[in-house]
Length: 382
Length: 254
Image 1 (cartoon, rainbow over the protein chains, first blue to last red):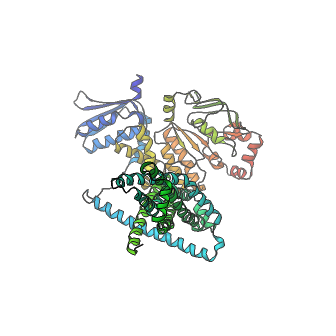
Image 2: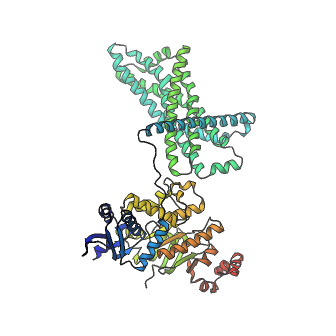
Image 3: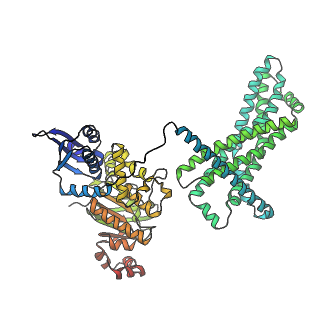
């Protein structure tokens, strides 16, 4: 009996006059309805124009969900031309039914989706194109606002937040040195190994120095360092500013007259622009060191030999070009990070979304910018 | 008849801070029970202990005949389905719409066809007095009063017999607060609810609370109907009901 009480049940019986008798029993409460719903759905669909009696007397308890289920199929049966008579409903059940009916009546909804399935990809494409343009527009106005604040600051340089900038250099630069060391060292090792295999075929072992020196200083160190900083610092900027947006700290700053660009964005952007070139120089050294080690072990090029060759082949311009990319990459990373942070809306999910977007954007922009540099510098013959 | 909630000799300590020093009270079926007290008197903590979010250091709490201090996993899961909770700030899931917020518990515990679920959710939305179009809104797009109503609808999703409200009218304007009080009264009539509410809104205490307990100094200073409580000579009660605001309120009467 106890198990009966825990599940709602419904049975369809023929009565003596050939009419249909629906007997419901058990507990018609929300958690116990999962078995009756499919039965009702199956049995009610085929019933048309038949007199029906629905017996509720054995229902031990019922809640509003149970009533809604009942009402749904009663309405459906009536719409199909069945005459339904309810028997055995207790006063409490009737009251609950009245209550539910007064709220459940007149269901407007079921907004029809008029768009056809065929057109949907095109509407998606159009929507995302518009969203993309809007994004660019928002980013440009963000950059513009930032520029105006920067110009005003140049007139009153004492208003610049030096202390915050120093702290950001510490966080974004010094804090990232271990991971930058590791990655650039490994890059040097990889380049040296790959080069060694090819160059050994020609007995041109010593050229591995040219290869490591130029590729690391000019391209790889800036790129790898920028990607590490984008993943590490860009994402944290988005999250920090995003949380401040959610907790309305940004609003509080605005009403106190603290320009968010002056207090939050510029210190971060300037900090990364200072830190990244220094980190690239550091990554140059470590990367070449990694290559030197492999050259020594694998190709029998002694350290002195390596350094001697390095002094001859590595023009200083390559190092300068690599380092000069730093501030550009840094600007892109810090600006995207901050910009996406300000786009966070007032729910927790959007922080995660915008942090992801910010890192993806920053890495893409860094690589695109690097490609632009390559083309430009080649055209200029540098 | 057995009380729905029985609390006896509960002791709660946060570090060296003794919040509850032997609390004893009971809530009867079908009543609206108020927990009162100044801020820091541990009324919200007591509520959290009743809904198993926190454990007291000592004492007994039993809800619907189950002892919360020695509860199996299954019993706990069953018990959690018997009550609805309205948190102070609503605590609606910000990534879900109002309709999804209300439907999430139904979806998890009741395996019903989608259209029936939709109808239940729509009924709850109307029941708490929200407009139909609120269903598709996100919590960030709601006003304070709508957030309270939406999370009340969520608390009522499974037709619980027991409803816990943590400062339901705080942050609402007087008109909104009055409407909310009325709503709770109506819902109690319709759904046979037992309501436990933490409040310090004098208007709510006057209009909807049947019985109440006043907490202070880690103890229950007074328990009973409003008249009974007001007769107590304890200084905290005097301060509470006979202070400036309390006096104005009691002149207006019920």
